[in-house]
Image (tube, one colour):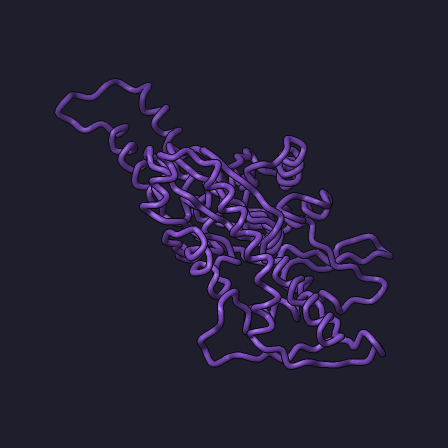
Length: 360
């Protein structure tokens, strides 16, 4: 697998790897378990995630990324290296990597991303802003002089940007996303039922009956299990979808207010384009029940959820990787002898491919 190209979506909740010609080959939780006595990693991904809230004093479960950026460099480095090496083991030699970063990331945070991935033995690293990668993964043409508003709701952050001419015209990032919905649910249950629940239980409750508008399906209750805060004994509570709606409304409105603020700061011409086409939602938390409709109600324009919203960033980075590869071909081809006017040049063919890839 010499010369393999990899796109990485290094998220707070999950790490996704897209390998050229193979598709998404890794989709695992961004979680690592450490043996504190031996000071070594004992589990990563799903195995580590299953240990959340279930470890003793010796083991510690950590997320190497918080709010979209690396919070533990050594663990992030181990996580990336583990999955890159697992892809092709000894057959993969010095791959090229494209990795997404938030719009407003600092130079120090950029360097942490580059250094953590470099340790895996990659040949070249390219950074791409998450909203651009998400837009390309959603099949949006960002090459035209036409404004597009993408809102990428992840686990740790929500990245939103107005895109035009392959660049970011205006952007905003808020540290409110899927994790905050889980925390709001856990906090609500603790306050109302005096029941302390774990991270995984809160997430399960959100997936089962969560939403930011009243649910119309038949699933309206969820049995939350945890610990009684008054006596410390095992306990449970039957939570309704109306109660979860009440808990999730605040973080949802915080994201909506951020989108409204971004729109206020956007140029009128670009905003007119956005009004015509609507807002595109990407990211795993874009699938929260009713969020697209609630956002549409408050901004007064259509809101669409991208196909496979959770994979848009990884798929978009793959499209970007292809674009750069074909661009390299163009540079090489331009040095060859010019062909006759009646014969379509290979360079022209690749230009057409470039346009297709950007749209795809």
